[in-house]
Amino acid sequence: MTTRPILSRRQLAALDLFHGLAAPALDEARDLAVCRALAGDTRIFNQGDAPVRAHILIEGNVRIAQSGSDGGEIVVRFIAAGEMFGTMALFTDRTYPADADTLTDVVEASWSETDLRRMMIHHPQIAINALQIAGRRLQEAQNRLRELSTQPVERRIASTLLRLARQTGCSTPDGLTIGVPLRRKDIADICGTTLYSVSRVLTGWEKHGFVRTRDQRVTIAGLPQIRNIAANGGS
Amino acid sequence: MTTRPILSRRQLAALDLFHGLAAPALDEARDLAVCRALAGDTRIFNQGDAPVRAHILIEGNVRIAQSGSDGGEIVVRFIAAGEMFGTMALFTDRTYPADADTLTDVVEASWSETDLRRMMIHHPQIAINALQIAGRRLQEAQNRLRELSTQPVERRIASTLLRLARQTGCSTPDGLTIGVPLRRKDIADICGTTLYSVSRVLTGWEKHGFVRTRDQRVTIAGLPQIRNIAANGGS
DNA sequence: CGCGCCCTTGAGAGTAGTCAAGCTTTGTGG
DNA sequence: CCACAAAGCTTGACTACTCTCAAGGGCGCG
Image (cartoon, rainbow over the protein chains, first blue to last red):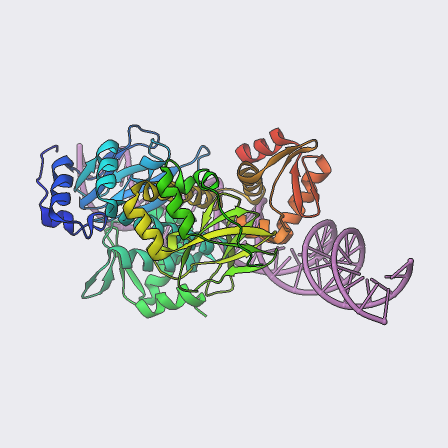
């Protein structure tokens, strides 16, 4: 599991974090990267762990979940191939603020704090790219906050599925399939409800033919209907 | 209202965004800044406006609020002196994602997108500082998400007041006073509830002597009790 | 076959939202 | 200086959404 796939310059250039960089910078990133392959259902890091490294997922899916001092737990984000994770903590806490678990077999690359900081100083574009990513996630978090404050459960579930579909979806004969394996509990933890409510809503939709679940894969068959629910609550 | 207070190098050096910069960089920032004084209760920018500028609040208080396509509205954040705002949008949308209103008379400085980007390229530390700020806000947003998903209203209100006290509070004979004028509706919009629920909870606390409200200024008299409610729900 | 995991379904309870009305404070103009 | 209007706050009654708890079904795996 700790084989070392080699990253190519081209692979790095395709990542948002390294977008727009010249060849020497990419080579530097490649040479400093630690690259690992991990099995599914493995813990990558724990909330509270130090030291923090900057991670990028090359292949597979990862779930980032945060559990509070109370029992409460939320899924912060699902990470798809090409996304960075665990990286913002470098600049704040210096301990990971959440747990990261693999959902599938994955390949990930990571950099030490000092290496990343050095690269950012030498190639400020990296820092600016990171800023863009952080900005997008901040907006996403704020949208989730607004949804959570103002919208009923059914609508939030619809919005969540659409967001996941946009992030990881791929078209199939049956419709748009979300690329991440999702248990009811996962969906509940993303959109701030319980697995019971998710189950009720989803079986309702399934009866109408809007969605289908098979083996933890959710397929959106009635995109317009789901969009309508997300936008108007289905009225 | 568009007098031009001059920023000193020392003032700039005290800001998180420019922390750790050498004198020439600070001078560059000073020379490119547009600095304005504005009256209380004024709109600084509207959600959707372009072009986006990077703002820093020098003096006073600002409320950042986002209203969704539905009627829903949340207060994203209260900005205190020294904090940046409206800046992350430079790297994502290029339109402001929220409204900004002054709550008091304020002085703010701002930079154009091109100027800020140029400064970041020349002085990567600025980008790294921005990254740190973004990281903190992202974590804060995630904490709010968790609270909103898992905690009852009373507890969220307690957490919110504590957060605001930490951010803007100052000690007074009566206790810890929050430095931002807060209407019931503002509190409700921060912690995802209604002004009615806030009113009930706050008058309850006021009867027990935990808090006091006077002229939209909230004072926490019983810090331990409020902390207890935030942590255990008051049990 | 039995165990574990995930999902569904039902019944009941409670938190918090909605609506409506009245009160307090602040500021303004006669 | 008073009166009135506007804005903000409190309170009560009612409603309902969604959580909780409990039980049972399907599926895969040892």
